[in-house]
Length: 170
Image (tube, rainbow, N blue to C red):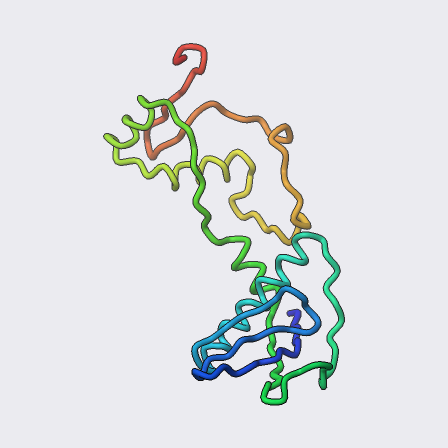
């Protein structure tokens, strides 16, 4: 499993909090109410920053060794370690809120039928894309196009199937 360690600069504030930044990673910053909180937040910030860089195809810079130029004399340099594969799995599988547009009658039918629209959409999309056991690491993060698969115009819900014909229900 991959392991990355970058040196972070922890700058104390007057109230006991810490600001955190990485000289090797411009734009990656964090903050914590105390040292322990700052270290936890720094680990999360570093993981998300590296994940974003890799996801965007940016080159992840080499680690520089301390001491760093222009560092405040009361700052503390701390190694922060992440495991990118674990972070990638968490980030790629987190739930995100997505708005969808449905015909009123279909939404009402789903509500009356106690159908969880989020779960139904997830299940249907996974079926459409044959992603029941989808492993993003095998796809190199590439998107699967809709034209790669036959799209069925049906919605499976337990034992019942509702067929929706756009021509009939305009």
